[in-house]
Length: 254
Image 1 (cartoon, rainbow, N blue to C red):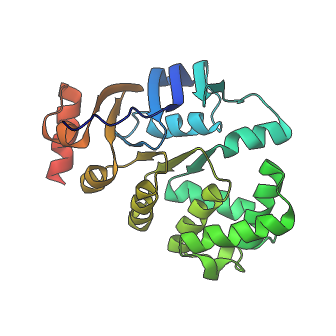
Image 2: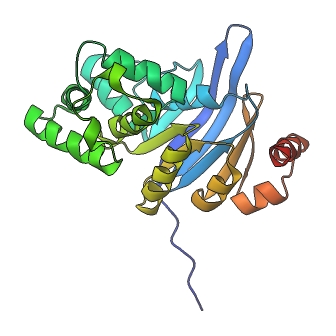
């Protein structure tokens, strides 16, 4: 008899996470568990709260209530200085392409090269020596196929280059969880490789094929809530709720 696979250890835990943007309840008492080495696809219609959830997990968005635990410890969202930078580095967020472009151009806007920025963020967040940080920066750029961009500055980067550099910037800090918000096709290819290496990831996507081949589980969000959680095959073939069925039906018609 084949033994059942050993359960994965819990890594990220959200309980009752809520966030309001003005009159809009962006997140409503969200519960979420992500196990070590697990890849979860987060799907849902526009305005469902997916990006707000990603930013909350990374600490870029201050939540109104609830708790976020990483490795059993509260995420230090209210911390300052090095403690805040270190806490946020444990969750590597690669924003949507437009947000990635703004973040990178801001980070590189003071005349730093790509290599300089990836070195700087390690020194600030991890206390890494500049020499070791530069070595790790080159390794991260090499991993994502962006080694040639090491000496470039923000305005010299094209859209594809910016995507690769944004991923390298997240990976160079060796985060415990990698969060990808609507990655473009090239980053989805890289994400498959990272999943095969056991990287823990939460990925916002509407690419069914990508979710099928990469994710262990699909979470469906609607109205600021996580409405369904199921393996990809089950979710895309037989969603349980009417909202999920409508969503999958619209995806099929595209």
